Image (cartoon, rainbow, N blue to C red; front, side, top):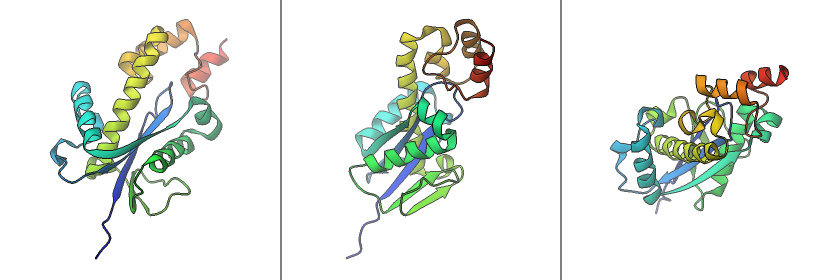
Length: 191
């Protein structure tokens, strides 16, 4: 009997943010999942994304991996993203035979990986990972916004929007800001 192929999809969220960790999700879809729901997370409304993420989590195997702001500063954003991906895959309770990764870089130490540029648009299992990662990270930033209310993280999720940049200029840099990123670094240099 032929061994069943177990495929995981992996995607990260938050590479371009000025604050917060980079978050990855690894997802193994179970049979019978409604694939029509799965598309690039950026093309789904906030509310709908939460619903679809809950659906994915209820009928698949998934894990989340993070790389902290300090790790982003120490390693650089690309290496931190790859580290978060590796952590997500290693946390999966079922080991995939094949791991499909969005982008063109593979985390070191992972076997049987294939990178796919724009995978979150082209491959359903990567789309599922992009949705789960995005909702997880958005919720994390919404929680942080309750404590750090001057940066509009509840709506920009740490991206460099006008409100976020104005908050940085007015209230300074928090421990959640990526101090190596240009807009944050610039503000630090002015102090």
